[in-house]
Length: 134
Length: 110
Image (cartoon, rainbow over all chains, first blue to last red; front, side, top):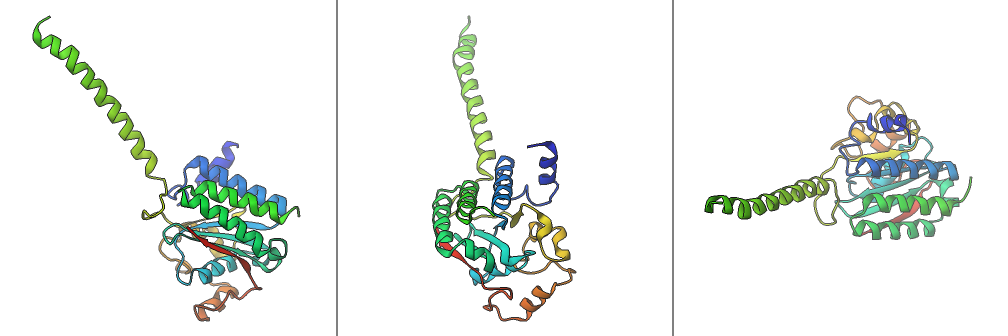
């Protein structure tokens, strides 16, 4: 991890006010980059409140990504204690709902123990592993 | 040694050490728990949205996307021109699925 990476991470306002410490942010960044590179899909993680209906809001966020069909969104709402994994039409072929449910289960187990960063990194790795190589 | 000196050395010294250890423990644990999420406790952080390549977000809103969205959940920041997808979504009823292709995935709670 170079100094350049670190400044890229910290010059975004709001990120450091979030729930993650700097080492956790670096781990998340690395997990996202590895997942994207190995699968060719676009993974993204949203941590914050979701409006009701939760699923609808998560899908709306997913629709704001550049190529929703190729994207996977992990939406986590610690206040409501729910998480949603949204896969686009093309991503869904490589990442069936069953695989997503399995990742969701392990993430929820980690969140239940209070480990937001660890659960997210593990979930990303699991999803990337299930999706396979590009 | 006089009585006062004895008390100062044998009682005051240990008390000072204990107070120092207390201060260190509470100062460091206070700082550590402030960022920690605990299930069931309120989670008061601003929403954050991570992408490995932040330019992959739609439209002009991408410059500083949901990272700064604050309380405007599910809404565009004021003054942002809506892309075609979002313009449709604003007109649609709340329960309407996203206007792009079919989505899948999973949900869970803890």
